[in-house]
Amino acid sequence: MLKVGFVCVHNSLRSQIAEAMFNHYGKSIAEAYSAGTETKNQINPDAVRILKAYKGIDMSRQKSKLIDTLPKLDIRLTMGCEVECPTVFARFYDVWDLEDPTGQPDSAFIKTIDLIETKILKLIKEIKAGKYN
Image (tube, rainbow, N blue to C red; front, side, top):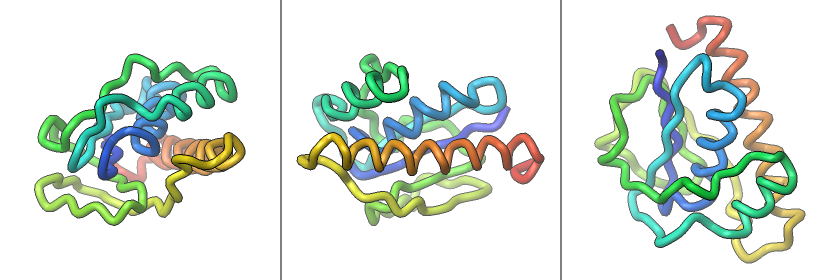
């Protein structure tokens, strides 16, 4: 089974949403992970609250993790937070340019969630089509 990694600096918001959404929509076709070059004490509570209320996806049990905890990845996606990942190799990689909604109104979180969902659903479709084999 393919392994997909979502990487950001703090692994507390965008990469966590991406991991939760991928595992919600595509857990039967690949395993998703997230990690950061640094960690936070907790996942952004607004992200947890809004993702649950808006999409019914619960990521409250996820924890912020460092990139050295990632397994060998097939696909690595960074969240557009200018993070360098020289130690995280993958056969395929891309940068998703996503703004950080921290400190903004719920509508900014919803915009980010919608963008991530669109990218996740496209990625799942590509995996199913064999693009990453």
